[in-house]
Image (cartoon, rainbow, N blue to C red):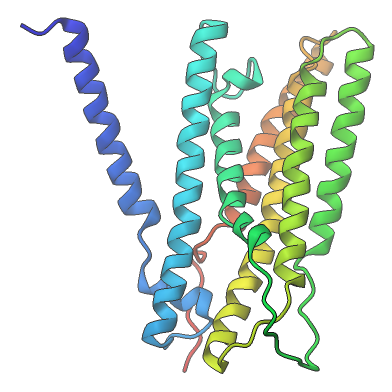
Length: 276
């Protein structure tokens, strides 16, 4: 007869598999409306629709896997090192919301980093058409400021004797910011290959979305890291200071989720396909 532990493990594993399948179906599945949104037309060609569909599926799958990894990471680290997991408080690495959100953001960024290893081609096309500029440069500048400020604040917290948590969290945010910046440059600055007119339209549409998405994701991660830095300060003196710290941490988490949603690979509910 099977032991109670084995039965419990089998039940938990079955529930996890059911959740993964449901998430795969509802979060990764691409609908015709999604294709119309990224294509900018209600009547994309069959081949174009296939390219858009694969691209959106890639983005959504990376976000899903990243979120699941973040949740699993917080659970394992929290139970192993700290004896519990938290939601919206406690140690950053044991916080389910913070780690899950960070996992989604990093996963979404990883969906675009393939551009960093795209092979160069000797066959290029010359064009007098100006290259599209990177989307939302203001968001990128704000993200840079937050990233630098996080490292500075983390350093001050460490010098003041409040521990190294804020500093190492801020430092961990730097390579993610650098990858986002490099990806943004790769999106906008790659040499133009020779493409058919139809393929050029698809490439332009996908690059436009990718540039917007990376800008929102970089800012979302910078806001999230800033929340981690504030959380890593630990207990502060005074009710007002404690209340301010709580508001900043929770506000950073909510802000990161909102920004993450802005860069999502799906249209808003209010979006309406343009008339033909």
